[in-house]
Amino acid sequence: MSRLVVVSNRLPSGSTPSGGLVVALQDALADGGLWVGNSNKLTDTPADRLTRHEGGKFTRMSFDLTEEEQRDFYLGYSNSVLWPLCHDRVDLMELLPQYLESYRAVNKRIAKMIARELQPDDRIWVQDYHFLSLGYELRQLGVTQPIGFFLHIPFPGPNAFAALSHGQEVCRWIAAFDLFGLQARRDVSACLQVFRTAKGAELLLNGRMKLEDQIVQVASFPIAIDPEEFARTARNAPTAGLDDAAATIIGVDRLDYSKGLPQRFRAYGHLLDAHPELSGQVALLQIAPPTREAVKAYQDIRDELEQLSGHINGAHATLDWTPIRYIHRSVPRERLAGLYRGARVGLVTPLADGMNLVAKEYVAAQDADDPGVLILSKFAGAAEQLFNGALIVNPHDIAEMAEAMNLALNMPLGERRERYQSMRKVLADKDVAWWREQFLTALSASWQSSQPQMDPA
Ligand code: GDG
Image 1 (cartoon, rainbow, N blue to C red):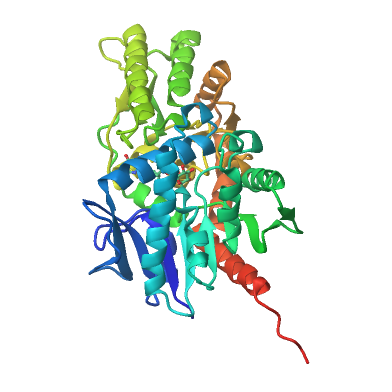
Image 2 (spheres, protein in one colour):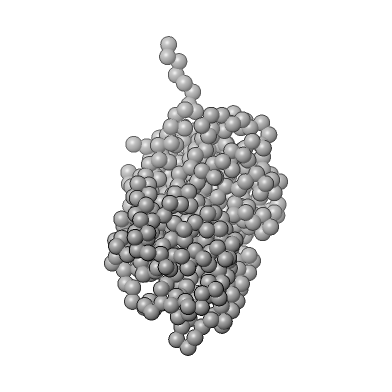
């Protein structure tokens, strides 16, 4: 069996229970696999060797960034160019030349450090938008092993992509991978359309694209969870502390402008205006842990939400009822699972989202006998899979979202069960092990097909 080498921004911890991606990949890493990630330590000078960490079920190695690289590569190109670009917010892009230069340089440096560690049979799986040029840099160093990439966020359409003045270079980065994995079919179609605009690019059959002699397979692999494990966690979770008098509508999102939180709060305010009978009967619990606070756009969204929640509470609260509980910090995973289970409605209304795992977690956490209702934005990748069971909404349409909440709160048990069953089946059929195996199988296949054919004679 060949060794799996995973590269991601976050390096898993050796001891504490880890996030979804680690759980997803740990089986495949069990045979001496290697995970390379950011140490989250800033150094004065760029290092040229990875640091090995003890503990854990697989080998872990990290790279450090300098303060300048943190600013220009991480906060800059990754989170102030690529993130807004991929979430349809080109207006928030900060196209500074030093950001792109740093992105190229950091990926090149990491490629060099990884190339030193590689064994001939390795397969490399690069995660997410911080490392789009890593495959290209590894190829420049003569690495010939299979290299796959998975983008966790949406792929931009050709219009947004045209806002990058170096789009041709980005297409070259993409073409250097053997497999370019995306969350949803809409992303595959956007990627193919973008490639059509690249100079010298050819679209081949079945999602394969060719640019300057590099052939890459593009395909969708909707990321998933382990629904059984999550359901167990939710069943055993503490629920104390919830206000039982009111039906809870729950939202759980990193505080990010892509998640549509202001629109969601406005829709909830609209619901309370339009349905005064709900006064004291319903409560919105919004958990929104902080993220990327050094980026201005994130400070702005934080201020906006504080104002909005204050405004809605001011207009509707009574002495014994708070309409919105807005929690700007992280809640432990077990607690979160219990909160999902106790909530009548799960509100997942991003303006753009690669997949959205909260939607899947909310469904997995429900009590099959008395399940809650998922309200899901049509712009979440998850909508391609859960459209039969969720109430699909347009997150820009405040009145429509308010009506969906009202419908969900009043939905009869029979319909709730039917919708839940249909979504639960999708979660069981396409779980996280399925996601991993689909990707790794496709990676082997596309790498094999690009190898020089042996002459049968
Ligand atoms: C990116 C893409 C794609 C959130 N708050 C707390 C907490 N969480 C956990 C959730 C969930 C995860 O964080 C969030 O995942 P999402 O998928 O919803 O969104 P992003 O963070 O934007 O992730 C996204 C994902 O990558 C995977 O490919 O689906 O589209 O944007 O698991 O439960 N967990 C705890 N406390 C919190 O307060 N413990």
